[in-house]
Length: 303
Ligand SMILES: *[C@@H]1O[C@H](CO)[C@@H](O)[C@H](O)[C@H]1NC(C)=O
Ligand SMILES: *[C@@H]1O[C@H](CO)[C@@H](O)[C@H](O)[C@H]1NC(C)=O
Ligand SMILES: *[C@@H]1O[C@H](CO)[C@@H](O)[C@H](O)[C@H]1NC(C)=O
Image (cartoon, rainbow, N blue to C red):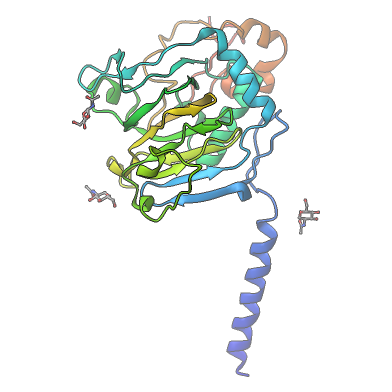
């Protein structure tokens, strides 16, 4: 054998060996994780290219799912939609669920999930809106819609929503699927009787407790992607709980809500500071070059 070929083979062999060593577990580590759930990219499956969509099985533990529901349960209100022109929240028949927003990093569990989302998506924590928890009862739904904006007000705040992570907090006996009616895979996705008629109108994902769906609403060239049209099918049996993280192209945390005054932005800041979080969790608490800290007053970095 020609020696050049031999070296070629040899290098190829080394390459294969290196790759298989690297995919044994994630090389991406959480900075300050306290959760029992480790980030594990081997549980991610690519679902569709148009839109770019991925499912992560078991992204949340059962305990995390239950915890998010408990945080939301007593605070649910009728869900709103963003008005196309004014950018204001408004009630609409296209969305019949009830829901509420948590605070960013409201507690350790929430902060941990937000960090895990950032590791998975490669999008900064501060570009995310706070988690929205949604509850759908029998017949409740969200008609297909886009997560990107049409109005100037929201666009100027932190730019478009580039991606959405939708986490299922409960199993649903029947219905409640997430459907993408414009997806290219809608015809090739065969579905048996366990899917609702609504789900059959597009590529669809069944809600399964702990799973997380990630999809992008913008193309790589930053134009809006109409194939990201998606909806929540009506619940037929059981109930549906989900948590949504909308992620913007720019920092949402820094988008106008900060006055520069020396204040805490979470009522738990004093307690967290006493517990040593200013040192343990400095980026969230104190801030960094890009990120405005939430507990600057309690951490005594301003006056
Ligand atoms: C791969 O992961 C398994 C299970 O965690 C571990 O036992 C094994 O030693 C790892 N192998 C390498 C080459 O890191
Ligand atoms: C918002 O505007 C888009 C684009 O013009 C349109 O397709 C959509 O139906 C509108 N949605 C609502 C709720 O008015
Ligand atoms: C952006 O990318 C999309 C998808 O590849 C393409 O259809 C569209 O024409 C592009 N738009 C611009 C302005 O480049």
